[in-house]
Amino acid sequence: MPKRVVLVVLISVSVVTALCAQTMMSVEVRETQVRSTPGFLGRIDAVLNYGDRVEVLEETQGWARIRHGVSTGWVHASALTTRRIVMQAGEADVQRAATSSEVALAGRGFNQEVEDRYRAESGLDYDTVDRMEGYALDPERLAAFLSEGKLRLPGGVQ
Image 1 (spheres, rainbow, N blue to C red):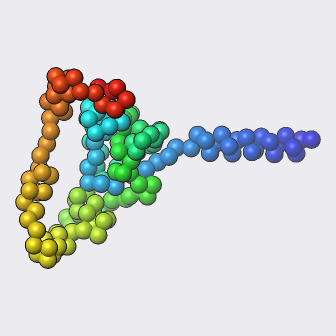
Image 2 (tube, rainbow, N blue to C red; image 1 turned 120 degrees about the vertical axis):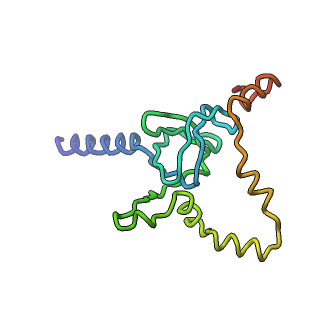
Image 3 (cartoon, rainbow, N blue to C red; image 1 turned 180 degrees about the horizontal axis):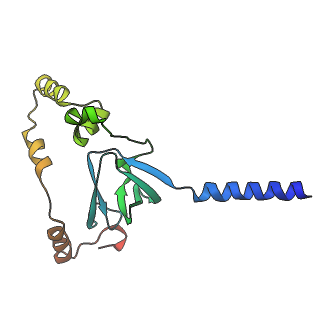
């Protein structure tokens, strides 16, 4: 009988441990915004950078509620990976270490040389894309726009 009790206790502990295990993920894009609600129009509360580690608390409709440090919020799931991304230069390499932006691009097989070659071969004009990447929308102006227009996010969240 004691062997059976020990076996039941061990199985129970294993199940509880598995259920309570944290799901840790890494940010796999150059930069992503932590929002107050699961949607692109939610208030931006923080910004995470490539390689930052987060704990995923729940997932819903393509969004992950995460904890980073003491803060929680929502990040689009496409910005996260289960891979652990480590960016650490040794002391001798500090002067030539890559930036987080360079590492993010390189991780996807993209660098300035590849971009230049692609631009030359395609003959397309990327000036508009470059300008769009430089746009920054003030979250307070967006919130005012939504409020004044009586716009609601899906699910009734404002």
